[in-house]
Amino acid sequence: MGPGASFTFLYYFITAGVVAWLFAARLFGVSLITPLSSEVGLLAGAIGGLLGVTFNRSQTLEVTFDSKKKFRQRLNGVLTGMGYGLAEKAGSLSRYQKPNASRFFAGDIFVQQRETSVVLVSRASNIRVLAKRLAD
Image (cartoon, rainbow, N blue to C red; front, side, top):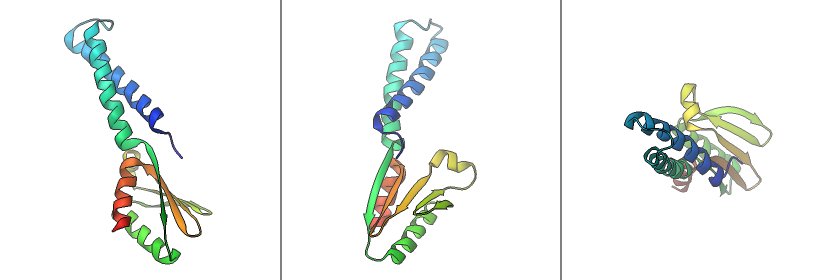
């Protein structure tokens, strides 16, 4: 499982905050230690952290099934419809990713096959789409 919500928030908070802090100081022609640039950095960091947690934190989804073969076909159809293809398989664990450069922005989807269920791990935005499409 990937990083949790707190690490994801901190990563995006710090990254967005520092970039906005430097940008505000340059844009307004003030020092980096003035309250204006610091407040802009804090606000941008909070917004960036919340957006990062909403869309990019790692989440897990467990789906149960009756027929392994039918569910596997359905899952492959859903993943193909989302633009993902099988990148590698090791035992009961499979890694799906998008082709070309888009894989760096979409994130991988990890699938662990169990006897009567499958566990999916990916970004929160991917898990929400998978949960919706697999529920239909």
